Length: 287
Image (cartoon, rainbow, N blue to C red):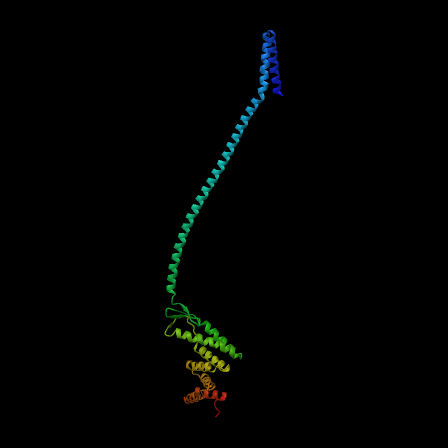
């Protein structure tokens, strides 16, 4: 609208001026000034919008440039922060890596020291071992208590007394094995303070209960073997009578008769007790 008014003012001013000029009429100074003013005003109205557009366009472009520059600055700052954070992370990782290497070196040193101590300990305890009867054997000495064997014999006697020959025989087999293996392993070795073995009476009870239970379950050869060992350990009348019975039950009658005659011929109280036991078992007839 302003452009139209400005253009109209320019046209009218120029038209009036031209008309007066062609008619040969001179314009007074005030009229000419008025027409020139009208033209300037018209020109101003026509050019006003374009100047504004130019100004505002450049201003908007400038603002856009400022905004873009600010955005770029923010992005650069963000990138810088990420770089700084990555640098800090790299430093931390490097530090942790250095610590890890240091700890690994320390662990390796400690493992080496532990291995040396372990080898030294193995050297000192290389001859340390447990015997089948429960005692400890080391450096030519035997220590401790034959707890495994003692407990086994106690259980053996208890089962035999309760009339359980099969269970007693199984326990006797294990006890005799432990006793004989331990005796073989410690042959010629010194006994130290605190060494508790199965007593002579305990060994006699083991062989006697074992031999009787073996004969009762028809393990005659085993019973005979244990009876012989029992007599060798303790040739008391009861063990001699058991050996005679085992010889007869295993079919060795001639050997049994010879053993009986030799034992009785020795005379004395033991021989009398032995004969009485055989008479009770029906092996010999009462006199």
